[in-house]
Amino acid sequence: MVPESPTAPAAGWGRRAIALFIDWVVALLTVSVLTQTPVVSGGDTNAFLPLAAFWVEVSVLTGLLGHSIGKRVTRLSVVGVDGSPVGLLRAMLRTALVCLVVPPVVANAERRGLHDLAAGSIVVSVPQTR
Image (cartoon, rainbow, N blue to C red; front, side, top):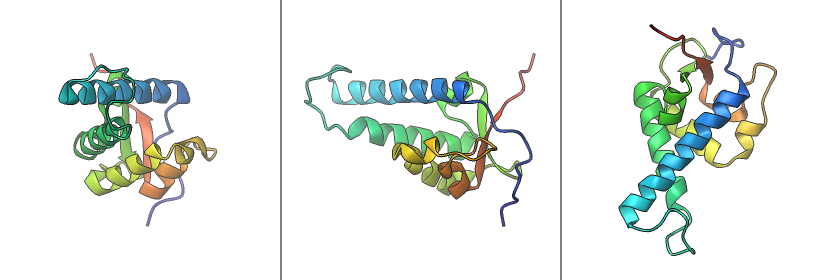
């Protein structure tokens, strides 16, 4: 059972948006390298390839490390509401819902979108280490 209130406050929207942008650029560049096509093409490649690359990258990294490339750069982490790692299956569900766009936009007062509520996760700030 998932507790009603997370153990740490959710991270702000600004850093989340930057992380999402970075992850999307990584997905675009990955597809560009793998298909040997320009990042901005005239529709030569399948339009869903960047989305698939985004889903794989974010799901695997979040499930195994607790953060994607974009979240690492912006010092954010995805954890369960009890502070535990989310694991691969919950990360896959969470990222699939992010790909649908609407679930992350609909959020509660704790800044947890529908994707976080469904996966039992929360995005938190990682303290800076020296």
